[in-house]
Image (cartoon, rainbow, N blue to C red; front, top):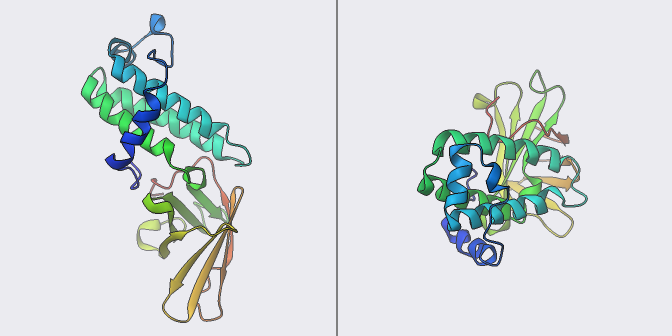
Amino acid sequence: MPPFIRPALVALCFMAASQLATAASFDCAKAGNATEKAICADPGLSRQDEAMAALYKRQVEMPGTGQWATFLKRDQRDWIVVRNRECRGKTECLKQDYERRITYLSHPLLHWMGRYVEGQCPKDGRFLDVTPELGGTLDIQIYVCPDPRGNMLLQGKNVLDGRRRLVVQEGGRCTRTLQFDTDRVTVSDTPGCAPSLAGSFTRDPRRSPFENE
């Protein structure tokens, strides 16, 4: 799960969720597995499912976010598979998983999350992983393809300014600026940076920043 998921945000989500309908986000008459049956049998869990579905719909339909919807649909399918496999019909396990998912989908910077690539990654080139965190910051990591475990080039975090720029200071002479645009992050360096990481990275909707490829 992403590092910004914290219980402190969950209460805010439940306040909004309490105003939603008590039914699940799907037709309980067609519940086909242990997970769906458990959701339909528990009113609190059913409300969580409704809240999660509403947040997911809002994220998917967010305008001006390029390939973000494609990435999130894939991510949601993966989450459902893991949810069903790990929790099966266990109500408490499902409630905890829904708490995490609701908080995840509530993050205001979630649409920037993803893997942005340069070159023919994973064969060669570089990739940039972006993960939102609490406090309005984005965590960024740049790696050499195809082996990220031993080839990290940059790690840092900061908030986006009004022009959607994130600045990472390295020592006293090197400043790296990441410009965020739809499906693209452009890196520029000051003359004191070595090695230079300047370049343009494009979102790959098939990849997640939680995959070590």
